[in-house]
Picture (spheres, rainbow, N blue to C red):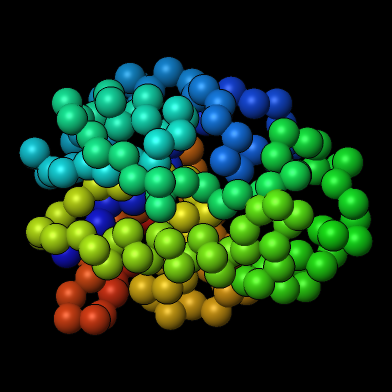
Length: 180
């Protein structure tokens, strides 16, 4: 199966704000959709995070995108909407020391995010699918399928409005390209 992982356009949120599942708008998706269409197979099924910044691009790419909450960004709980610089340094250090298992107050761990994202992809059928989602979800999926240690997958960089292609076959995964 070909999985086209598409990161939403740049969100309309001030730099330095923790926004995880905060439902914010994004920059104009039309130019992004026009560029991405050439990289996607015709009539590919499209599943999107229900957050507005992903849904706006999904709607510009596909006449009937499906939404799946398992594709939402990590839930940062009480940190959402706050400046990173204002979050308790002790908590940020604890998160950095155990990225996979640390849970922000009222939020979820990266491990929980990975579990729900992998469950979403594992349930898919067909030969190709496009997922409009978030960098945290994309990192978690690549980490799982490529068997990367959390220290590596948590540092992967995905550009806004770009696509990454992962191919799954007989339990094996191949990264075809990133950030096109």
